[in-house]
Image (cartoon, rainbow, N blue to C red; front, side, top):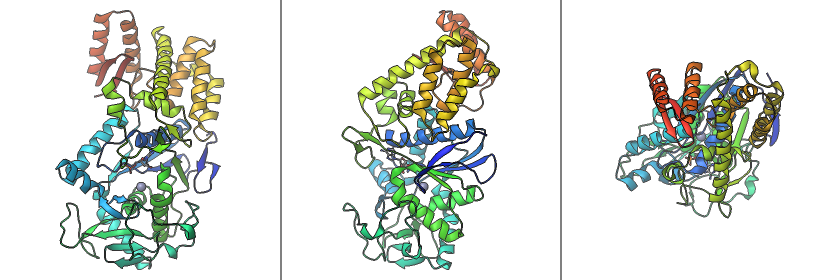
Length: 467
Ligand code: AMP
Ligand code: ZN
């Protein structure tokens, strides 16, 4: 296997990646809080994580990818104060918290599909793991890390020597955020809720009995309980956006390591923000957010333009969302699609042995250097401009697309395994379309549909996906 270097937030250095088990990777990515649509900022983080997963797969690792769905316990203030986001969403829409969660989970699945993001191998809903979360809190209680105050059960962060090992924050100078109400009963500012009690006289929509009283889990405990359960023996990589470093991921590490006495994940990767003009973070709470639907689909713009734009910026650099930048990305992607299509309508046989080793080495050097996608795109462009033989160019660029996920073969790569037969049919159909041979194009579509695929004609070419 080639050497893969990843920037680890724990050590603030690029490190050589070594998984716990040879050839396998346990990957946990913090998923959405499903009380609203994902905004483009959230989606930028999921695209970065998809890049990481595809790079691991390209390097030959078997990846077990787990993603949580937060459907309870995430409060509007990150330090356990404020309203439950799900209950807030339910009130806003006059629905139940469960209906809200189901609706926005499905919307999220559709969004990631449109962006060619591979779905995780395991989806975990916080409300399906209440028992595991309670068990974990019991262990922490037995070990003496827990104290009870009127609104809930809290983790005593002062008991850990290295509570700040991920954030590198100077705890002595930390101040309570101005926007959130202060919880006077907490022993230390950084202490966080493990279990919150339902307020007296209030019947919450989502609440469960526990040894400490009726209530609901704190936001952080779900990720610890679910990742330990799903990936306990391969805690390799844990990801999220940079806003998770100081609170959410710091608290996950604190409670998990306190409970197990073992290191909780070896590599922590964080994606930088998508900002709006002026450098302000795109956020659900700011009401400044754009969704994939209102910024792309509804305007007839291919959502993959957003994916392409994200690839053009390194994941650790802030990215600014702007109409001009998206216009540029749109022409960049269209150009790439056109070039790939030109190669395909020449109808050369696609043979993996035609992959050009020289370009592949350059590509691997870029992606394995902490996912340098801007460089990887430059290698793809250089390849397409080169005077290599057409079948070599095609085989190589389609090989790169396993990582880029830009739909260069005209096949939706987020679909499961697409058989070579279907790739061939899609290519023939593309040629028929180019030659305006509509009966032949229809015949080929029917053949693909018989094999279980949906064929859609977009103005950027055909999209083929599994039914
Ligand atoms: P949430 O649904 O709020 O829990 O966020 C889901 C993911 O999106 C988390 O990994 C966040 O760190 C990330 N995220 C939130 N806002 C942004 C942003 N403006 N740019 C990039 N990532 C973000
Ligand atoms: Zn999480």
